[in-house]
Image 1: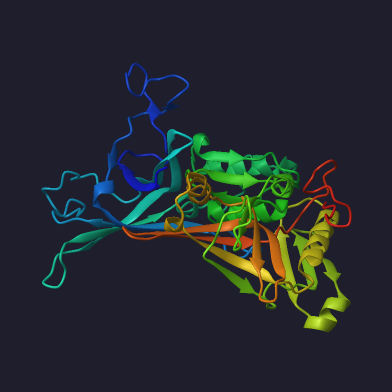
Image 2 (image 1 turned 90 degrees about the horizontal axis):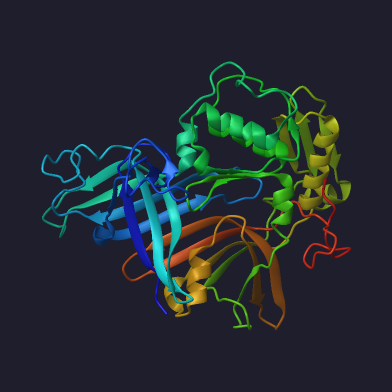
Length: 423
């Protein structure tokens, strides 16, 4: 049994890929089927011994919102100003450049084997130095970091239609086409094929991230950055099937097979209610779905999704219907679950909590005063870590599935009168 140990390493080499590049005839970086083809060796420095605090933020707060740029801050004890770009005696002189790769990960023993679990992989955007003063015991430097979304947000498509983004292209192929514009490495993407075909790219300058998020909304899928630093595009079918897995169970009553949590953030409000939904594809006719019953209870609450790139108005209407069914009623939500890594001494718990990522399925149970239970099946939509020498707190942002399919022969998604048939 081993408590996970946080590790931080910087790769001073150029390029976006988090891997050791393959260099032909090199004894270390020339191993076929192990290393990734590249033009230079990785230049990795482990800075764990200097780490004082780590904080990471990834994901989104609401399932109807876009995923945001993931961020991390790493505070280092730096008495010799090694990480000050202005220090001519720094061992990293000339290497402390913006957008160098950084990886935050945990090491532990699981089932008798040493393993590494990625927590955050991104790029250093700034080195903020706090020099030793009369009131400070030591000098520190804080590394401000962002994930791959920062890179995609920094590149524009240009004013003209994206080359290769033709009519009839499946959504996954369109995402790959957009990533190719920015030269984003193939090894750093995991892209589903897609279920919907797209219109020709409309042109007009916008960031690559914004262009892909339009495809995400058009497909009714998900686009985010995972723990390893890869960008992931889940098509609509994959989002539905994500609920057809064995979930991770959490409860506050030590039920057999369940993990414990320290706190839940409940919400019962009107924030996600929609009863007047309009979806319009680019150049199409607006498709509206309205629930008079919901409007009578909660007043009219409108939602608009416009200029998506699907090819038919029928599909726009399908989206409007799906949104209305999912959001026309108020529901008690669990917006987040907090975990204390140091409140356990179990390797399985360590592994599960540390490896939690976006679109993992969890079932959370809460014993209420009076003896009743609230149980929710939820997707993880965001992951936050706050780590110091004496604390390691994790917050998982959660949301109920927006679309769920009826899947024949499935123990989870094959129950009549419970699962919906989605388009």
